[in-house]
Every structure is written in C-alpha cells, then in structure tokens.
Length: 332
Ligand code: G3H
Ligand code: 13P
Ligand code: ZN
Image (cartoon, rainbow, N blue to C red; front, side, top):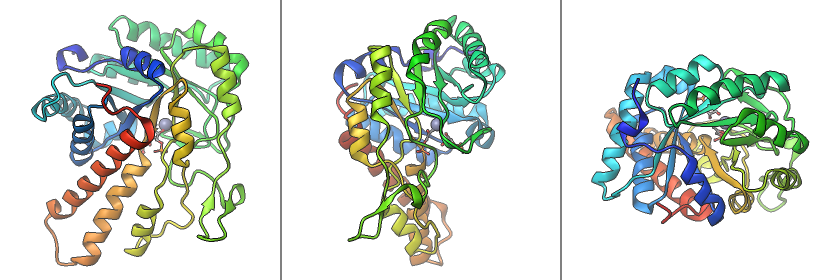
C-alpha cells in the first residue's frame, strides 16, 4: 500500500471547492507517455494551475501501472524543479470499470479514482459506486461517479447514444453513494467526432461543421438540485481545426472531425463544472506535429526530433486551455 500523500500528490477536495467558488475549472489531462506528462507539468507549473493527471485503464495497460505511478511521483519533483513550490497535482483513474481496478489504484498511490458504472442500471450504479467510495474514503482518496451516459466509447464502457443525466436522480445518487464529484451527460462525447454532420449545421463561409449547443438547461437543473456540488464534464475536447488541418495536410484523414466549441466550455467552467476532461486534443496535437516532421523531413529517424515538436505543441495547447478556456491559471 502506497499513500498518495507520500508521493506529494493531492486529492480533488480542496481543488474543487476553490474552483467552484472561484468560477473556474481544473484541467484533467490524460497521459500515456513521457512527452505528454512533461508538457502537462510544464504548462501547469508555468501557469501555476492545479492539474489532474488522468490515467485510463487503457493507459495503465499501455504504459505499465508501476511506471505510471513513478512517473506521477517524478512529475511532482519535476514541477518543484520548475519553481512550483507547492505543486497541486492529482493522480486520477479515469473511467474505472470495476471495484478491483479502483482498489488497486487506491492501493497504488492514486489520489482520486473514477468509478464509471453509468452503463449499469441505476441501483447497480449506486451499489458499485458506494462500494468504491467506502473503500477509497478510508484513505482520503476522492471518488468521481457518473450518472447519465455519454455517446461513444468509454474504454470498455460503451454506448451508441447519449442519455442525458436526469436532474431528478442526482440528489438521491449523490446522497446514497457519498461520491465527491459527479460526471454528467449534457451532450459531450469522447473522441474527435463528437457530432455527426447530420447533427450539425455548416458554416457557409468556411464549410466547417457547427455543432449543436450543449444542454445547459440540464446542467442548470442539476446545479439547482445539488447546489455547490462538484460537477465533471467528460468529452470536452474542442478538436482544434488547425490540428485537424495539419493532420489532413500531411497525409492524415480526419474528415469532419468536430468537438465542443471553446465558448461553451468557458461558460461551463464558470459554473459548478469544476473538472473538464481533455484527451483527444492532446492526441491531435501530437499527431499533427509528428506528421509535419515526417512529411517535411522524410530522412528523420531520431524520435526526439519528432516527439520534441509534438511535446512543444501539446504544451502550447495545455497552456491555452488553462489560460483561455478553464481560467485555472494562478490558482495554485
Ligand atoms: O475517456 C476516454 C479517454 O479519452 C481515455 O481513452 O481509453 O483510449 O485511454 P483510452
Ligand atoms: P475527449 O475525448 O473529448 O478528449 O474526452 C476525454 C475524456 O473525457 C477522458 O475521460
Ligand atoms: Zn471520459
């Protein structure tokens, strides 16, 4: 058993309380590799933003759980080296799908876990979430739960359609589970194709897809039921069109990739939404930068020469999100 406290990590309790009061949101960035982690920590340290490092089940399988944990511990030390005296870094399991996985992360030094039982029937979601909460809280580890189902694929949790969170269920759910934060479904989804062209209109000038707005009425109703309770938004990548264009220009194929417009995320960040999950945008930035190097310098075979530019572009992306979208700069 390793406590996250020994690793210099923090849970989400204080982060979220301050974010709700201050009208901003904490960035939750997924990572699978060293370059992503370096870029996240540099961006957070240089902007003095609290940050949540998210590890999915897939990331754990890809990178090895032991290595990831030491990477997170290293991230705290790296942040200090960058001049961030008291780094506010949380290590969080993203979309945990079983009690065993959540327990293993708690035992392994994570400071926060998500149990995503949103695809189960309501009572089963409550029972599993409560089981995780009861275990995690013994170690001061915070727990995110999910109510409502996002469209798309969530690791092994999959759903073809989105079912908005029912505001009339949230009080009962939060009370009976004891969860610390609640991920809700208001129209976001995972990946780089958040809406079909049929769900969008098209900007006649640019030919770009214009997505439909998120269901802010559902968010408002949830906040009315649970005043001051931390709300989480998954699937919040904006799918920046400059990265999509770069990818397509340099041999990729991502037609009609579309995300959540930033102004909608800015609006959400000012509300009780205090954690905003971003993964796909980082993947797009990485891929765009690597493709550009490969296209322009076909003789290049030193990974540092293409992973380095990818890291730089991701750092720029993370800083942009922190400063211009979530407003979490200067809060740690
Ligand atoms: O919610 C999903 C995250 O983007 C993680 O994706 O399961 O491919 O690591 P992954
Ligand atoms: P995106 O695919 O929009 O980046 O969402 C990531 C996410 O929700 C991770 O849990
Ligand atoms: Zn998610």
